[in-house]
Length: 385
Image (cartoon, rainbow, N blue to C red; front, side):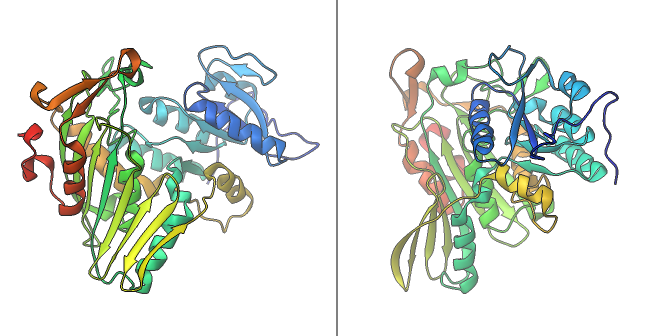
């Protein structure tokens, strides 16, 4: 396999240290977290932050570039971190990979299943590494649940259910033009609860059910609703069939009365292991009793850097590993527009940017979706009828 480097581009690795150089594309919002991460790696002597790319000028000692193309013409970093809107992922990641860079791409991978296939082809064409930022794929708790399942402690798996009951106010959807949109200026964005804020719940539930690739998913049912005045969904149910025969279901909302820890229950004939993925904790209930386990997490950028120099290391979350999630995203993208929740089932709380809707009994219905493997409508949730 060969890589393609733009004419005039030169490596920017520090010859004195030979440390990998890293550029961050999209440095505001969540991108600021990546800037801090790379700065921390630099302090630890593991990488060098050499460029910041953003349409808005960035002051400081690190060189700023208005767009990725400008950076790649002048200097080629070893690794490019992309933390930009969903609909820009394919073009930016492809440009970086074809320039000979390895990539950490924020989730979700792309805005459609077709784009996912195109990006996967670019990865294969270039031979470069592309890690996708589903941080839970680096969780030791995911590994531990898999180990527990493999021992037979839970018996035969009967299903995996995810519950996410979060709160997002008006300010969340006002932060960017693409926030809460299905399309923007004729381009598909697909920014809803399933595909962005609680995407980790869906992707991790699929992972625990043994579904990583596109082929691992047999069918998807989605039930999309919205209480916010947005285009996309903020309260949704997803039911997924997998090739391994384990059904995955998720009840998700941004319209809960208060934020609760997201959780994924792996259910078996003998017991249950519940993963609280935000804190990498597991609660196991089986014939052995009940116990709580706290685990660590592998940082995906650090792991990418390690994989660059150790070919035997497999990426924790490659583009191919997100194929199952993209099957769900595609069902959301091609599904009907979310149904507005009737006013009778919505209570508005808070003021200004914190003003948010609360859907009646939504926590109860999200839990039922996860436990029973049926959508809101199928269960007869009043707000969905």
